[in-house]
Length: 479
Image (tube, rainbow, N blue to C red):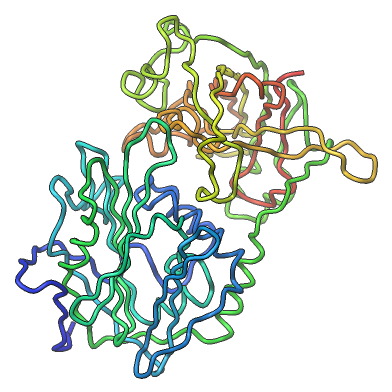
């Protein structure tokens, strides 16, 4: 691949190592919603605040663009309004194509190592502190795409006091934001540095989190980047592509989830796939049949009945610290649910006690052939709702977790204990899948956690890996 002669070293005199990030680790020209969700949930190496910024930006598509500076492909502003610092970026496609860029890290914080494989592939990870660093290069066409569709990758919204300032250096601009964790048991600090080259139109986003980081560590990383502008070009997105993407984003704006009573079943009922599952990527799930046989609310989980090897997180390091001496759960903090993590008021945190919810389920493959299936139902909280026409219905509700360690027990409603585990390699990444023979029935015990004031609202959601979410069936676990 030929390179143009322009290679921008942001900070003169630094050494450049051999760790290279080509073409953008995470980003491409367009995303589906499922791809965005997969990125956001990848071991928190992309910051929690991305989800916040994405959703907030969806709601603020009308913020508008700033005025263009003469002879500049890109213009950046940070506005402080209503207690927020709003970073706005606009791109003027002066040509039909943009040059790709290649980024090399010249400075890497001590203890952070680039990962060639494993759960942090393509990112830097600090094994001692569980800190992470991601460097995301965006050429001008990619910047234009993300700013025009308003997906929150670059047009970012932070609390006003998170904005640490702007640095001008050798024809580039760096905006730095610093945030403390919302978790009461976590002293991790996250830093986001956005490096802009207004003439070339490219952006490099440096995300860094860790414990006891120097205040300007992400800035130091950004200042020591070597950015090479390549001869290879990519086209700017057409207006039609942009409008289609914006319509897709708008279609995912969350709305209250109303569930007809006919979709809420009882223990002992046979649960089969809704019709919509037949025409999706999860079509093989249509062959599954579930029967919830039993559900118990427990104060403790004796190890002779619930052995350590069936825990999904490591029992000794992740679960045991959350237990009292008698085996009951320690209290944890939760916040009222908000779409945006930036809207969390730490004074609204409430300390609550949790219970174990052990559910035994029969899972049958009704097909004539063996198959590999996603078998794990998801815990949801449902409460009665007035549907408006007098019929009985339910709505989902949730809380925002305030204790980071507690996420090991409750991540998106997944169980932390599963008695059948067929795939346990790679940190049990695929443990939710199981091979089931033709006509075979597996009996599996799943254990979840539920706050004691939400026990009556606990339900299991099935077949939520495909099809329409308006048709997912539920089983109420407590009468």
